[in-house]
Amino acid sequence: MTIGGVGAVTGYGWGREALWGGLLSGKPAASVRHGYGPHRDQDAWVAQIPEVGECAEAGGELAAPRGESRYGRAAHESVREAILDARSRGWRPGRRVGLLHAIVLGDVANWRDFYLLDGGNRRSRGYLPLLPSTPISVVLQEFGFHGPTMNVSAACSSANVAMITARLWLDAGVADDVICVASDLSATPDMVEHFVNMGAAVTDAEPLDACRPFQEGSRGFSMGEGSVAFVLSRAVERPYASVLGGAMTNDGFHVVSVEPSHEHIFDCVRLGLDDAGVVPEQVRYFNAHGTGTKQCDDAERDVLGRMFDDRPRISSVKPLVGHCQGAAAAVEVAASALAYDRGVVASAPIVARAHPGLLDGTAAFDGGVTVKLSLGMGGNNSVVVLGPP
Image (tube, rainbow, N blue to C red; front, side):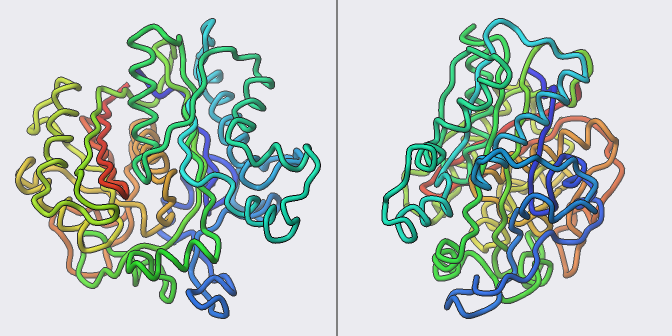
């Protein structure tokens, strides 16, 4: 299975090129938002997707308003961009094009307004966009696709899980091609407050000061938003990258904390490598989950040391784009897919003493195998193994 098209909406703006340009700049997408701090009267650093029209200078092609919510527009436009991109790269859709939507909380801001502003009273036209089935239906109607559709939810591991599910569909002949979209626009004041109170998110400092995965002085992650889509197919003339394999496990330990032995994460990586037909010595790049929290840093350092003998080069983009929750892995897979295509790997700049394998900003990409690890709340572990197209 290959990645044949990429579409993205992130804190850097609307469009794949806005994301790529932002990552290469080495400057975080977050800005100061008033009233987003843990006590609601404080300022906070958040990488929120801008409203349509705010980011013309970012270089991305902006979406036209469609009467949808910001969530619906972001999901729709990321899919639309991925499909148009894939067609420009020689993709011709098969008879059964399926769609997988990686979704965790859904249209958080719109649901909040539905209850708190509208008292639960709306006409159907205003209510239907709240439902997870609506963005999927809008896409299928626009492009005339009739394959299987499904929502996938596995916390912050959801995008990896959706890609693995897409590969299972293709292998089983359930679909000829699969559109995979992961969307999360939950960086609202109430959600930010809870992640700060759990000790995971940091809002009172610039992202590069707060979020330092694999570096000294890291306090956690900055909240981000994103909607990223891929066309996954075996029939693309000029794909970005190959999806060689993947795997999923669960710690079965705690609703938030990582199981301290990390054995189930190791098992997930082993299964993913076996599925891809790859041995650890072949892995050149490790695309980190990289939240900057202590337990995540400890787990990933353990994986790198014990499974890979600290050989791979480590890339981490969460300090730049923010932790996009259910869409995080999709943002990071997009960065790797673009690296294969453009010969440059994006990573955040190093600002403190760091793991020797961590890339210091952008670097030339040497190709080879990339392992993308994602760890989600509730013990959700997943890995996707990528290779050259």
